[in-house]
Length: 350
Ligand SMILES: Cc1ncc(C[n+]2csc(CCOP(=O)(O)OP(=O)(O)O)c2C)c(N)n1
Ligand code: SF4
Ligand SMILES: [Mg+2]
Image 1 (cartoon, protein in one colour):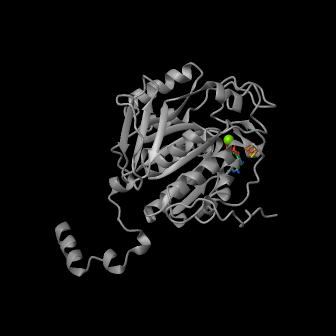
Image 2: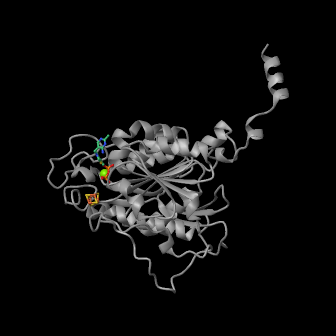
């Protein structure tokens, strides 16, 4: 059975700069459990791409395996898509990005897909600063295979039918910071007000942008003993500050209190406003970000918002000085320098 979205829409729906409605960024109707946090994240991705007026054919959405990795079917139905093998999404993005730097790469993964089978791939995509947005839909369990604990499940946390987890959890933002990530954020699927601007900022960032989104699994891991349940996250989340994102094309009209805010111009000219709430965190200082993250973790709090950003990030293309044009746009004269140049190279090696 296929679940296609109905094509009829109210004629008065607001359109973006390209003339597209939000429906133009949606996908098929979700088959996930009703109330699954992953669906809210899909909705946030749709909203961010619509509000940024991105051309759908300029986006490539990629994923691994899991309920989370199924979600690209439910958003950006007019974009390129590749559902890869469990944990292997980063290497597929690496190949695609090296061949065609003109696309925007949006990777979606789960905590199982990223923090267990895909850990090696994740680590190397981070340290190479691959130019992509990497969203982890983190429910602390393997939802698709009936709720086993994942490596991000907190010690002592228990899923619906499970015992308390005896192992310490992998904290993906902390790990990414240690690996040299240039954009690290965390959010909650139930907080679109925070998540949408973070996705927009991640899209504008040049380099690897991780957003770890706590996303409750209502079927297997939303009980009172779980630290990834809706109630627990609502009670324990602490935001670094409010985030506001203004795309390059829009006039900046909002006013912020001096001294309490940061204004960052992104690589593409968009502007990120950060209103600082957490006194200890300097989001442009890796060490400060690591310390603050650990302090919150020790208290059992979940730090959300923008945790760290390197404003001068150099992505993999910058480092490797790759071709500015996609490989499929190169012609023979671009690839073959001609006899004279080759003869000079040969002569220099004699
Ligand atoms: C190579 C391989 N090993 C194991 C599996 C079985 N498997 C499918 S999804 C999954 C875990 C998914 O967990 P997560 O990435 O957290 O996604 P969620 O379903 O929780 O969103 C596993 C172990 C598989 N499909 N392929
Ligand atoms: S099993 Fe859990 S993660 Fe999978 S769709 Fe259902 S609620 Fe979502
Ligand atoms: Mg999971």
